[in-house]
Image (cartoon, rainbow, N blue to C red; front, side, top):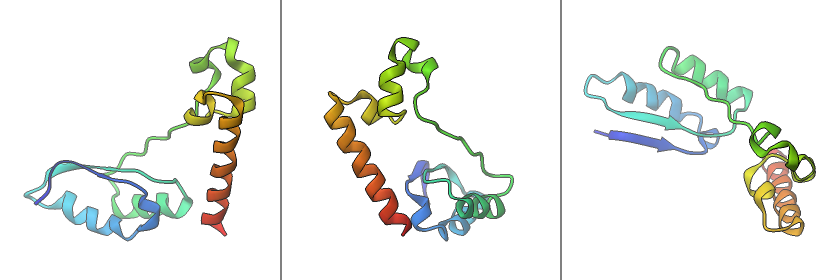
Length: 111
């Protein structure tokens, strides 16, 4: 049996795991907590809400905003966006490359 913290990343790839998680969470011998990470597509949220109702908490994570970066960084925040890696990149070129790659992989996943 599992114990401690069990982390499952990219749950959107295998949403059928929600029913398995319900079994684990509801087991009388359960000695673990589960942290499930992944993209919040409507299907994933629906699947998690339906399968794990009363056993799940959603935490929405956003990118950096002006309250975190400081108003003196409004231009880099605007130009680089709020994701940590491109915002904190060593230079504009590295930031741009990261953003290009992100968009490309995002579109390839969707289409």
